[in-house]
Length: 290
Image (cartoon, rainbow, N blue to C red; front, side):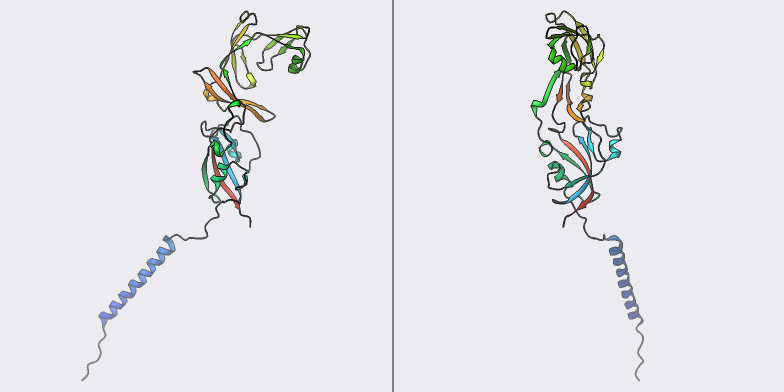
């Protein structure tokens, strides 16, 4: 007699285990690729030559760290964090529009923003060769910290009128346009003699830019012309911080104070020339012409 077929319970169990393992592996792979493996979408647009971009920037001198320009009002008004260079000036606070490769900004800035996407920030170090060029040595003037000034000076009546905007009259008092001290006028024909009359210990303001102290006066020195010794109260902490402006344009900036040599240096050129500059930039917008 034929025997009835028996159920292979061991085989069914093995198959069920195998299917369970397959399901578990699929679940693990689903979690891994769904939540662990990063999803790569469309790569961000990165600035390149020809693009029209908007850039926020903070510009400082690499050697002094002083801020000379920015596009951000929050930075412009924060003097505690961002000490300002003398050349810093107020203007409209908005991102800088740049057409990359057009020459609208210095080359180092132009090259530095290439490859950045919207929201990217970067510090760009721009040497003079990629910035505003080398300094012009003829524009630097070196002066003594202890300066001798004549008590008595002479000039023509025409020069007097051009300098003081009035006609000279003997006995009148005028104010020296540079030092700010009182001068007494004496006229002999077409010659005007001015006698400077500061007081020892008096503080004066050369160029209206810094303090200088009158140390002493020798009325009979220098063949009767007299000598006034003035000490310019300058030190290295004032580099890039003092200078002179006319109609908002920088005339000169203090660029060096050598206490050992007893000299200070004024630069009558553009303050950014010959300097290594640091720009902290952030890309705000990128437009790529079709």
